Image (cartoon, rainbow, N blue to C red):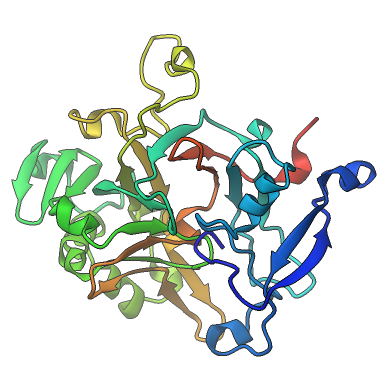
Length: 337
């Protein structure tokens, strides 16, 4: 959990960080951790037996590894994959975790870096834009001729024929902070964004997200036409590790994870995409879809949860106050040495 500390009853134990069975001993270190004696609320039904505290703090798991000289850099990477079906008590493929850096063998794109704007506690990003990107198919409501590029219409700006930018007060979006939290399943945004979001969603799909979920059966929804949510994050000072490799052979920006022409004032800001199957899930018991993005926080707080992290290898780089993103299927079992 990237936003949980380990302050509790202090217990010392030997922990083996297993890379390979034959070399595990060199990764062992003395760990201070806390014990819990009872659980309440949602913790009662989770499959995990505990929480690994990974926040920006001296008692975090990664910091204790660093202090014990087990890892040489204040870094770790999380790579989550979305498993099919419900999690199983026997275990489900969840992804990979790398201590001391990231494993480039997992990467399907170059890693790009967003600024981590906090130096302790939570991993906080600065959101510079939220977009909805519509898919290209015959079933999309309306035609491109109905809209002019860069046309203003109330709560939204149509930048291209397939992308709408929400016209948000960016300072207000970030006023209470927007954090990345691997320990929270869903994504949460300030409530004032909701009307802007629903207007743009309806512009793209023909119905609001709320109406889509509550007025239709899952088999009536055209998933290929639902928009992808794009979140633009302020770039770090060094957007790539090697600037000479930042461009393709035509010396153009690698478009997968950079905002590019969507924001010509900040073309090398980082973007992350949340596709429909990550912000919607099927509830087997209710036989209904449910939203995994909640735009209802009255206090103005924002949180990019685990569903916003799927299919990225995300590097938390405390040495350089930045957070790296690379496309990945997060299947460690299939990478080659």
